[in-house]
Length: 328
Image (cartoon, rainbow, N blue to C red; front, side, top):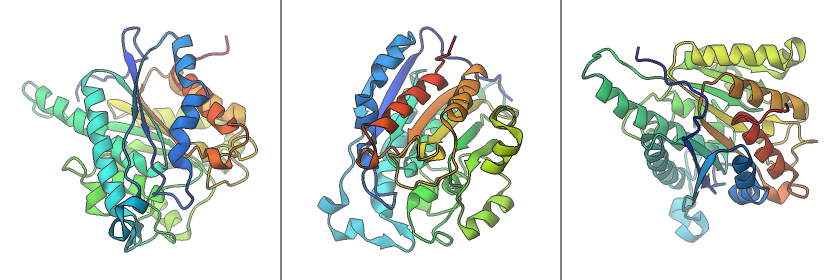
């Protein structure tokens, strides 16, 4: 195993922001405006206040299926808008790969959760290139990625198990190499992540077949019942340990619907009984304190459903907590 790369953001390391205004992986439109809502809520000022060097790459160009015609918009089996989402995730993977190779910190904001397929592909494509360089001296080197997935949903569906066919319910499966080849093999390889290195946190709304898929997959899962019984701090200590004990990098993918809708109303798949404001911040604060975070993604902010950009503001504050903002 190569020496681990976990580290707190260094003083000279830039945070590179990329917005992905895609909402065709979801069942409701509007999350495509999420990157704008998060920026308007003051993300740049918040990061500058933390003393972080900040580069905004703007938004990835997403071609609307309405303009692309019926062929791009049709359902491919039970994977809605597959051609368009595959193209967008492939482009995203190239952008993320370039950010990593600049030794910058990737911060991706969405957009629906299907964008994680491209984010994780880009991270691993960059790490594989680094791995090839390390193999010159260490033939058995394999660089691996741990993932903490904070979400109300498991996102472990496939086109065969999904009731809706919405791809934002499939990105964990795609990272594991299960699903349409157009998504699983972005970057030319699969799987991207091993099951034992993925930790799901905050689950409370799972499809029937998805429950069995989670139990059979080998991923680690903490439901809201676990958080209720044990407390957020205990769950996050375990989650961070599980995601980092055998890996070289840590990616956190935060779906804003993990937070209770009374606090985060601006998202499309609301389910009551989610994380409180403080539980969500504690999770991000503990991730920052671990000094392990190497990339971050926040998704599913839908300003159409929001109240005075309340959810956009929460997203900004959670990102700040993950990147080192403390109370004292």
